[in-house]
Amino acid sequence: FRFFAATLQRMSIIPDEEGLQKEEGSNSDDEEVWPLWKLCMIALPQLGVQVLWMFLGPNTTPYLMSLGASESFATLNNSAGPIVGFLVGPLVGAWSDQSTSKWGRRRPIIVAGLISTCVAGLLYSGSERFTGKGNGMYLAATMQWVLDFTINAMQTPFRALVADLAGPKQQLPMQIFFAVVCAVGGFLAFSIMNVYDVTVHHMFELMGIVLAINIVCVGIALSVAREKQFVRTGEASASVCSPIIGMFGIVKGLHMAFYILLFVQCMAWLGNSVWGFFGKVWFTSSVYPGDSEAPLNSPARNMYVQGAHAFSTGGQIGSFVNLVLSLAIMGIGMTSFPSHLVYAPCLFVGAIVCFLCAFVVGQNHNLALACFVLSNVPLTAAGSLPYGIVAVWNKAAEQAGKVGSVAMQMALLNCCITVGQQLCTLTLGALESSYDVNEALKYIFIIGTVTGGLGGIAALFLNASSPGDFSTASSESEESSSYEG
Image 1 (cartoon, rainbow, N blue to C red):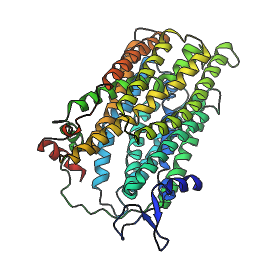
Image 2: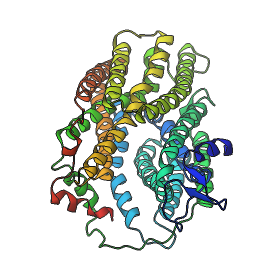
Image 3: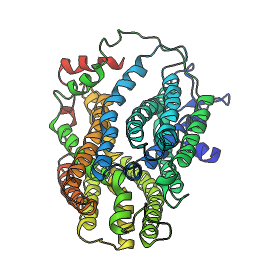
Image 4: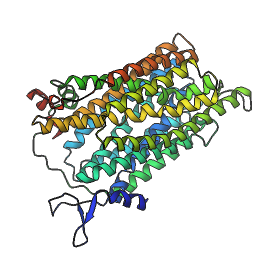
């Protein structure tokens, strides 16, 4: 680990004549520069959260169904993530930015989020242990919403804490490390799913492992991180809703390309969410038609186990693909090649994968595995390229002497993720009220084909050849984002 961090360190830090670490290009002798290996330690909580999301995503629906929920109810309860994520991120972010706690702006929220996540996670995964056999469905469904709130609250300050402490020349190496951390977290999550044949029958034990990973990661980060008490220089936001209002206010006066990008992001994440929420259901119901509640050693039970194992294996392979693609995209981003011409083909790959799943795969196990691995192409692209595009646009706007608002625009991109997730969840839930799960999944893949194609076509029009037009032109937009402090 130290060797990897030291390699990244050489990308951003050079020694001065006295042997002290000094940031390249820094003009301040008093500015503290954190060693990159310490920043990597502080970024470790992102690994734990990635394990949490990747573990919960494909298991929430089958877990509720194992507790007695209908397919439609279990699917629609996944609305918890998109709805809570849409609201909690900007609210907690603004609260963290304005906090004047003597313990710092970020650490108190991280600790409170971790404690509440542990409590909610144990109640969610052990619902039948606390309420009795056959009575845990409603407790688990409620705790799923609480978990989505606490995890979002806990993770919101992670990147902000690293950004607070990292120097300008350390930003790129830290983005590389975050890509590595997310890939490792995904691999660990899929590995944990392979511990037992039927994951949903051992949610309490496995959730204990996941929460332990988060405790260790946060403990390491907090043992290294140091924050100074924030002294507010302006007035705090008067309304708790100001962050939400600010996000929409900042949209006014922007270049048309930004609206296109928002549309692309919604389309991309509708397709991505099929895999994140319902990929395991597809593997264990359609590709491997099995039943987790069938008698032990029965054909249906064995088929389910094979499907669950294939899904976890595909996820492990996909984690490596995700890492390689992230680094490749980052490398392309350091060149002059237009990012939108990388993004569009990636979305077309996602559309092709959805088409294959709807009409070709059937019960072809190898092709299903290949499709799952390839689904990481649009997933990785949608998680990185739009943010780079916005950063480039805003940098060009600032150089043209206009007002930029990169943080709020990226927050809007995050909200588009939740919109895509919500569209996917509501659509599949509605389909399941009329069709069985296999037929409903086929239709959602068809919809994913269409949205992926539309997103890819729209991405071709993201050429910011006149970036000077891309700015927050109105003073009203400036005021609406002033809560950032």
